[in-house]
Amino acid sequence: MKRWSKALAGLVLFFTSMAMPLAQANTLVATSPIAGSTLKAGPSAITITTEFPLIEEGNEIIVTDPNGKRVDTGILTVLGTDAVAEMKPLETSGVYKVSYLLLSDVDLPLEGSYTFTYSAIVLSTPTASAAPQPTASSTAEPVGSNFGTNLFVIFLLGLSILVLVGMGAYARKIFKEK
Image 1 (cartoon, rainbow, N blue to C red):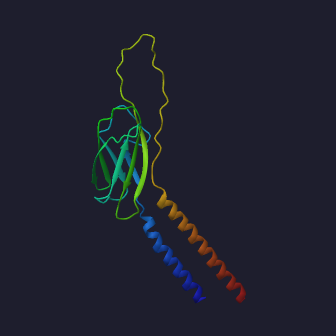
Image 2: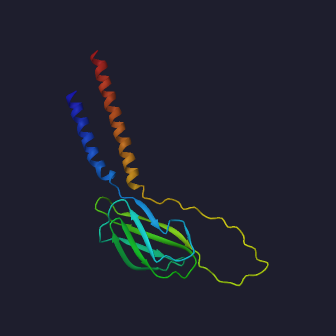
Image 3: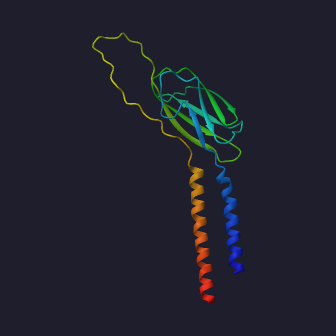
């Protein structure tokens, strides 16, 4: 019995120590502009907010226009949990892609991308026959990194299997003694 309890305690300690970094996984909290949104005016900056503070060096945010041309200035400022990338004026209407690689002290790099749509305002002369048509608006999908959450759930599943096996072995031992 002591051998099994020591082995089980050792496994629990090992898996608990492995799960501690996973419990502190950095995640995306907010983006500006919001992922999936449609803008009438071009943003002056892209802001990505994370759960944990970011380190100063090694972060990257790249914004590309519908033609694949980079439209951020390359200047990135880190303010605690916010990473702010300055933007050039937007000229082309379409879907813009924001790709990011953000580093914090507590986790693996937070990497991903999202899109927003820029619809440039076109000034035209109104015609008498043109009636405004309703358009469907898209709702923003929440964006986040699920890597840490997935690993944590897998860890909990493995731990529960170990506990189940341990309880089964203990129950077998008790019934054999009787």
